[in-house]
Image (cartoon, rainbow, N blue to C red; front, side):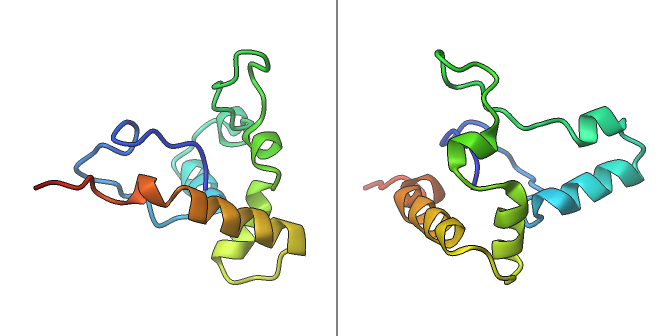
Length: 101
């Protein structure tokens, strides 16, 4: 779950971090010595003209901690569960290849 441009930021030949949750990526960044200000930077997509810098979590309605917990099979609040599942269903088209003859 996150902001993803179909055939944009996902267009690559190698995606070594794709199976990891946000906290795992942060742990890897720390282990490589990334500055803490970068590791803990609040994620923003900057897609909203009327609300530049709006945090992803505010746009999603769930926290990345809740998304991480959900993906790792841990319990989350009912509203978070619903938001994550609904978003997954609505964004199915972003996870499939285009139809071709």
